[in-house]
Length: 258
Image 1 (spheres, one colour):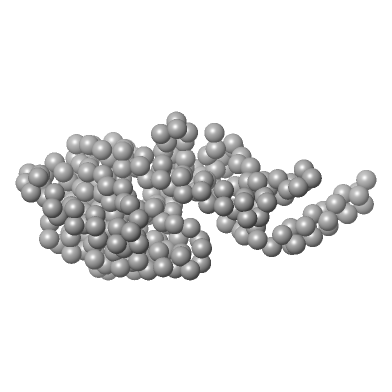
Image 2 (cartoon, rainbow, N blue to C red):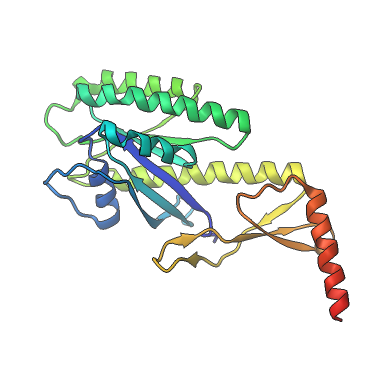
């Protein structure tokens, strides 16, 4: 079982859609009736169970929905592995989605040009326990899903109906995100291995900070001939000549010490 990869996820959506409540229900199984706008984005790291019964580490960012908080939310989305996009069928919530769809298009365009990987998006309908939010809203949800697909270049979008008040499908939303992020990460690893000839060997040990948050450790790369080299995740493995040079230097140093 491999736990070292930390998936960065960000919860975004209009003001009052229940972003903080969704995270609190998942993390603490609690719910507050008192509304308090989120003024400063923060994150909590936890572990999420996959369908395979493995665990993955997830960093969950909560962001404010007010206009004044959008610059922070947009910045966090730039390097996120996944985004929870919350909405309700209310007019102000639907209107707020436009700016998030615009940001999704920008992020997807940048990643397509740089080849830095795909972005996982889970579309979350919140407050499904609210009266009147029944079949009449199916048409609205359908339109939102279509717009989200368009923003992602036609990719299919996971859609989960939730209620933070009752807890309905909250865990499912985070588990869906974890599964999709893990799938994307596995595909990316396979592509790197195929292109470079390296095999990324994951470590079973989890490193944590003094705050208890998981820290991405160094991967061990198995090279031809049984040699190994530790490289921090996120560093490119493209310049093979540089790695070989480092290995030669390491070999000379070892011979000098013998």
